[in-house]
Amino acid sequence: MARSVSVWFALSAILCSVTAISAEQSSETKDFVLTLDHSNFTDTVSKHKFIVVEFYAPWCGHCKNLAPEYEKAASILSKHDPPVILAKIDANEEANKYLANEYEVRGYPTLRILRNGGKNVQEYKGPREADGIVEYLKKQSGPASAELKSAEDASNLIDGKKIVVVGVFPKFSGEEFESYMALAEKLRSDYEFGHTLDAKHLPRGESSVTGPVVRLFKPFDELFVDFEDFNVEALEKFVAESSMPLVTLFNKDPSNHPFVIKFYNSPNAKAMLFANLSVEGIDSLTSKYREVAEQYKGQGIGFLLGDLEASQAAFQYFGVQESQVPLIIIQNNDGKKYLKPNLQANDIAPFVKDYKEGKVPPYLKSEPIPEENKEPVKVVVADTFEDMVFKSGKNVLLEFYAPWCGHCKKLAPILDEVAVHYEKDDNVLIAKLDATANDIVGENFDVRGYPTIYFRSTSGNITPYEGNRTKEDIVNFIEKNRDKTAQQESAKDEL
Image (cartoon, rainbow, N blue to C red):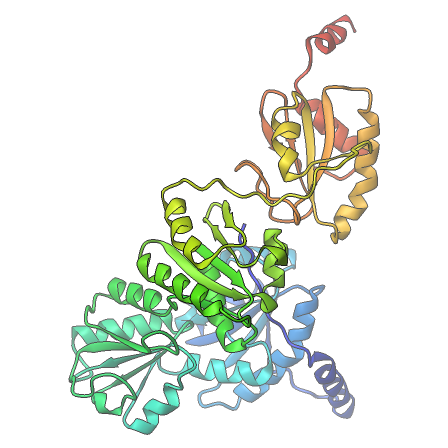
């Protein structure tokens, strides 16, 4: 149930107007972004060692915002030595959809960096405004690792604000150096890499080492760490583990946000302590939390400390209140959550220990149980899900919806009609659940968008509804999949 978050930009309207004025002034304005389709995609990509492709949809608002920035970046990069080529393809066009599938396009816009004639595909992880696109792609089109020949070179790369990986070698050849360069090529979209013959150029760490050694610089915890195993898989694991803070700080400082994203994308279980970090006496709580994080380091659980002021979206997602802070939530990869509200410093270690030992019951986010539930479409919440869906003894059609969803609003009167149709049938229940305010119980309900509709028969068969959203189609689907009572079967036989 993970959600991924994209950050976009706000200057597109101005740039669009500038583009429009330029178009009026010159009837021969050059488009620097190549337009691709199914007929020329493979041939074009195969001719370039480095090309960036935007997969877009004409109706997508984010794509429209990106367009002038992308064009401006393409214009600047066309003058780079060598030129960097930017292209686009309408992934919504029927004939192009197989390419969108091939490149795993899940939303719009999606940008891919294609290297070596398309043999190597890399996710674009850079900014979405022109200057940022240009700087990011200049680095991506250059060497995966920069040679550091002086202390000035090193200080330009290692700025104390980001993760930087540097290899120290006695010579730029041999198995260790080749493994390091393979690592840099593989991870270049996530980290910056450098290599040097002299550790004296580096701002931190033992300066007399001659290598081979990999030194990772970071803006937190111990600030640098060395590693000497040059197996590529071991190096990759080292970089992934060392680039995560022992405790990730979630506040309004934008420099922390890349680490917060990395924390939520981690395959580990996630412990999150939310507290007001500006109140007196908070240090005893945070220091104890850090001690526990140190205790469980390397045991498949990550730790985040969230400031109350920056955590409102998280509170809404988890269905918790400010009155419950300080509170700790641990979330597994299966979506199950475990909560301890209003905790003291000495509560942290026992709670995490009990969680690891399976002694903490899962927490379910749920709206209050409705005092009245008399509308044709019945309201289900997390706390009534088991009784109404699994134990009601009825054939249940259940809609998972979001209050803000336009498609859900259009479907609502249709479901009302379906519910009225079955009003006198005690064996059929038409129901709905606000999936933004309630945790979804059961692994059989895969909700990836709204509305999502499932049907559960009295015998337990669960079937997704993927038909047209009309009363007739939904009723026909229910009749096809429902379990009939003996009385209904007898009446059918008599007919």
